[in-house]
Structures are given as C-alpha cells and as structure tokens.
Length: 601
Image 1: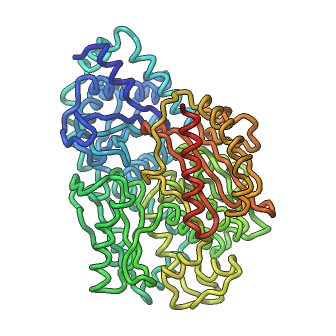
Image 2: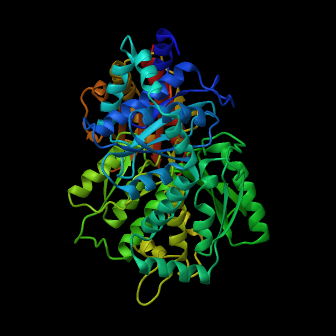
C-alpha cells in the first residue's frame, strides 16, 4: 500500500496543531486534482483509527459514534474514502453528512450530545485549494482543546513511527465490511438533513440567547426598516447550509453569487481582493434597492465571514478590515447584554476572550461598557478554552474570538460563524428604542458618552464611524508575513531582544516625538497564559510575543507583535496603533520587520 520512508516524509511535511492537521493533499498547492497519494491514504486511515481509539478510551464494549463532513475542496471525498473503512473496522457508528459547514457539523455534534461521540471534519480552512486537513472535536461544540489535541497528535505520531505501521493499517482496513461502508454512504442525505436542522435551531438559540424579547424587537425593527444582505459564497460549504433560509425567515432580503458547491471563483481566504466581487454584488443590489447595505464572504469551511458594507460617505461599497468586523460584533453583543439586563455594570461581571493580536480597539470598546478583556495565544481552541475558564470564574462571556482573523464566536457556540457575525450587525441596526428601552445603538453611544446622530435614522456607516479609531496591519497582508531561517523560535526571540533593546535606545526620542510612545512592556502568550513584564523574550517560545507601548500618561497606545504560524509555514508580524495615522502603523511594522530579519541572520 505504501513505502514507510515516503510515508514519514509526507507526514513530516504536514503541520499538526490544535487548529487542525494540514498539508498539501493534492499534487500541488493550487491543484484541483481529486486524488490523494497512497501515503496520504495511510495517514488519513491512521488518523481515523487513532481518533476512534481516543473516543473508546479503553472501552471495547460501547461503540463510539463519529460524525463526518467535508468542505468543498476536491480532495475531501478521497480523504473520507480512506477514513470510513478504518472507522468502520474499529466498530464505530459512522454518520457522513457530505459537504457540511464547520459550524454545522459542530452544532450537529452538540445536538447528539452522547458519550463517546465526536466529529472529524475535513478542511484546511482558508489555505489554498490543493491543501486539506483534519479537525477533531467532541460534543461541546468546538474542536478539541489544545491539551487534548497534543495528546491525540502524540498518539498519532507514535503509531506512524512504528516500523510496522503500514501493515497494521492494512490489517485494520481488511477488517472493514463492505456492507457497513455502503450503509454509511447510503445514509448521507439523512445525516445531512439532521446536521442542517440541528444547526438552524442552534443558530437561533445563539443569536437570540434564548431571549424572545430580542427576537421580537428585531422582527419589529425589520418590519419598520428593511435590510438586504448579499453573499459571495465562493463555492464554500455554506452553499448547502442554512444561510438563505435563516435570513429569509427573518424577512431579510438575500442575494448571492458563486452558490454552487466547489464553485471557487477566487482566493479562498476572505481578505483583500477576495472581497471585491462581493463589493460589486452589493453595489449592484444597492442600485436596485437601497435596503441592501451589507455583504459577507465565507472561507471554504464556512466558519468565518468577513464583511463588505455600503458606505454612505463615499457612495459605494467597501470591505471592512477583519479587526473592524470583530469590533463591530463586540459593540453589538455588549449592547445586547446591557439591553437584556444580563450585564449590569457594577453588579455583574462580564468579559471578552480574544487572541493576542486582536486590536486594542476592542479593549477601548470593552472599557466603555465596563467589561474585562482577557487574551490567549492565537488559535481558536485557546480562545474557547479561555472563555470556558472565565465562565467557571463567574464571568459572563457572550462573545469571544480572534479579531486578527475576522468573525466572532458567540456563546453558546464554540466556533466562528458568519451567521452570528451578520446577525450582530442586524441586531444593532434593527432594535429601536421602545417602552422605555434604549436601542442597541443608543446604549453603545451612551457608553461612549457620545450623542448619537439620530436615534431613529442612524445607519451602518454611523455605527462604524463611532468605533474607536485604530490602524492595524491586516493579518493576511503580504507585509504581515515573513519567511525566516531560524527553526528555534525561542532563540530567534532572544536574538530579537538584543536588537530591540539597542534599537529602543537609538529611537526612543523619535518615538516620543512622532508617536507619543514613552515606555514598553514585553508580553508572552502561550496557550491560555498571558505573561507580562517578560525579562527574556525567548520565554515566549513558539507562542506570541508582543511589545506593548505606552504614552506619557501610561495608557496603552500601540504594539508590535510576532508569532510563527502553527497551520502554515510562515512567520506573522503586525502593528496596532491608536488613532488614524497610517504612517505610524507603517513605521512600526517596517521597524518590526527590520529587527526580526536582523535577529534571524
């Protein structure tokens, strides 16, 4: 079936992390081929076997249930074909739902909610089309925690590094019964219907937070002021998900393009040029009907969606930065907490859990509401785990996420979801003042201690303009990505510290004069842990390293950040600066790049 040396070479090219196990499964990075190599087939079968053993937990009597789904990448079905026989041979009850959005399979798993149940989802998220990957999760609505992911990866490596691993896989696969495999595929439509219904019902629970008053206020507002939304599905898994039905049932107008599964018309990551077709779609829709003011573009697995808006000030559509999208969602969901009186400043405590490169505009928004901010290392599993920890400590955590990547996670969901992102904006726009209650927009403005422009006729442009001004490097900008030689990231960061300390002494007067930067603090982010006042930058290891800057009064005013990606072979950097001076962000980013490249020599 395969050669062990080639198998190990293929395995070593993959990146395995809590965010998923990813690699190039097709014959090239941008290939549309549906075939995968024999080595990849062994890897997929081994991954399925190890996950089945993980679910069993040593119990050979009770059979685990494994839910399967894929995004629309061409190699998805080949990976499934390699996994189902292995799962079947292990005695698992396998339910395959075909093309399924990531939030959909997770909602389905949550709905089933029985012991020894988990899901395997085939996707490489925003990576190029020839890539693919594997995500694992249980019934808590998200991927495995970082600790459990490490445990699974260790078991996987141990199995594949055994001399006779190929023979073991062949023996496992030979035990698979063809009638059981055929039964799994025969049940695909039924499984998909179950997944879709579970997801639709769960989305409603998340959006309204089990509060009928919010639902009634939104419906009343939408009857008063219509809203139209457009979507460029870009052939993603959301093409066969709930979006059209969910929005239409609320009375929201909906138009879309590239709505056939696999109809991938442009780069998968919903950033930069990938948002241009959606802008054009929104402009065309707005010209016919000015209620169309918002659009979104999901990635291939449909767990994130960045936004485009109709901007009244320029008279055309424009894309929002990922950090703006998350900030908007935070302002909306914080306002809902106040509107429903779930959060009362001074009486209850609430928090937002975010990743380390999320813009400090979220800190300013949270401070306006009296809500605490906690940061974790990049990685959805880290942020979700942090939010769960905070809830155990008595915090309300309504919203969480990775501002650097766009989208948001709204409790009780444990995964990003464009439906929840869009609905946060819809709620902000459609809940008006009534019966002594302020609108969401009025609550937001009162927290800012700002007078709203118009309590009844405010627009999305007004809401965006009210956000605290920050200039932030987009995570997928070419300038935010470096290729480095140093494999030991702790050593790189120690070298960087020597460069930074020298540069600080040389530039501190310029930084004070030009940007009002007076002091700095180094912070490490590893998993859920945030460590401030770092003496040795190398202690950050492979995690995030941030140098936070303060103004004369001691207030946080900017930062520079770095971290090696755990899902792609790249090193990411960024800068975040208070205000609207783009030259400040550019100066800090260029400075950061120069220092890292010197440290990498």
